[in-house]
Image (cartoon, rainbow, N blue to C red; front, top):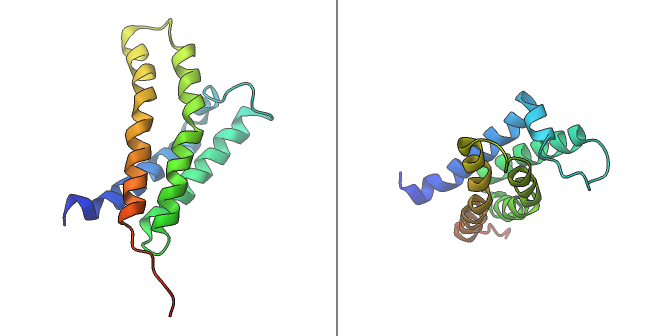
Length: 128
C-alpha cells in the first residue's frame, strides 16, 4: 500500500492516540487550556479528547473522510492557543522541555496541511 493510501489512516491513528491521551493523562492537558476560556479546564480537556476521537473515526471511514479531514484541519487551528500557552508557560524550564514546547508551535502547520491534503484526495461519494 502506498504512503498516499496510508496517509488517512495514519492521520486517524494520530488523532485517536491524541484523543485517548486526553483521558489517560488529563492533568497534562488541563494545564494547556487557556485561562480566557469559560468553565473548567477539565471540561475542555474532555471535549477536545472526544473531538479528536470523533475526528479519528471520521477520517478513518472513506464515506466521511473528506468532512472529517476538513474538520481536523479546523481543529488543529483551534487548538493552537493551547500550544502558545504551553510555550509561554514553559519558557523558564530546561532546554529539553523548552524545545518540546516551542517545537509544537510550527508543528501545527504540517498537521493542518496534512489534513487538507487528506480531504483533497478523498473522493466525494455521490448518491444516484
